[in-house]
Length: 590
Image (tube, rainbow, N blue to C red):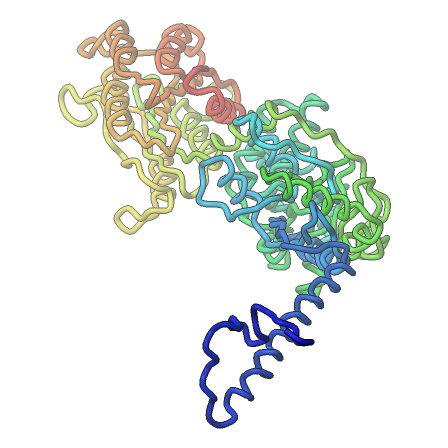
């Protein structure tokens, strides 16, 4: 029509053929129209800004969050590196990557991944303090992701307060794993352990603790140190463990009669001194034989392809020179052993990396872990003391009778057990507690630190050992006594302890004509022994009659997975008790 342009829709969105709306009153509609336009403009500007910002970061579109769980000691450094990584902007499949770092104790994370602990927070990348955790997991489940490159190192060292270093060097000498074994050996009562108290980190919770035991064990094996010495040290260390490094380092400043010597990572010593600022700083001591490193591997746990790419990008960032400097500034070394200003030749630290000992394979690690667990078991022991007539006979060259010698042996053995051990003693001959009752329950089995009628059980045992006298007319009612004792210990079996019947005798053997025979007691022991709940017999004989009775003694011990020994010197008892401790490792299949 004429010069007019017809359209199907008007500017307000209505169809031109529709009836026009009624005229609105007032100016309210005039206000809403520009307001709507302003909102639309703001949205467009926001979108534009988002696109421009992310374009500058190198990516656009939806973001993806990479969840990283790092060991608490390295988490602050990893968080700093992640902050720079996030600011720089990284694109993966067109998505912006944001890295979120949280700390997680390696033992807890490993327990969760292995299915033996609680729920583990979701993560795409894990940085534990050691490949030992991953190796242990893979040994149980081949599907566990393999560790990638390591991002830092921290040598496992010994540590002591600067105030005790002079005394420590006098009594301990140069820092070494062999020296630590010597000082910690429970049977070396006259060694450096009299002046040095070795503190260990619980190896099931700390890679530094496990690494120290592996290093010490490897050095002991290479040098030909007897298994007994290593077992003695492990037993003693199992009684003086600390749950974490900070608690251990804090305890080094506590004064006592012995100089404390602990185990820690080099970085933890630096961090403790830097953060806690003790009056006397802790000094790292580098073992002469070398050491094992905490190596902080990167383990990619993500299954999503995009997240795996993001993990690879962040792993690459962790290997940059800037990242290495951040790690060095917080007391870590680079994987090639180079430390920064934090680790320099001052305060006992050494710039040069110590010699690295090879980390044992998974089988060796598992074996040592099992050994430690068994050493950690408590002790429940019932000692049977022979007080028969032959015990009054003199021991040539000693000025003592057999009774006094056996009591000395028992007392020497008592010194090897910690206060939490449960020990009791019976004496036996014939008719000690009435006609036909060959034994007397002198001190019932219980904790050494427990009070018995107002006297500590440990003190009571020592008193009774000193008071034992041979019964001049008494025969050796061993078999009846052993049957009663073994039956009671089997009935009262405790799974968290090593349950043992210890027989201390002159080896003359059973000569009670009214009691059960040798064949009958062997039959009883074989029938009663339960490998699922093992109660073993440890037999120590002293005197000229011991050799003649060795065959029967061996039979009694073997029936229960135990062992029999003949002592020629009182101090040999330490070796025998260590042998008994060694059997913890192989029981019940020794």
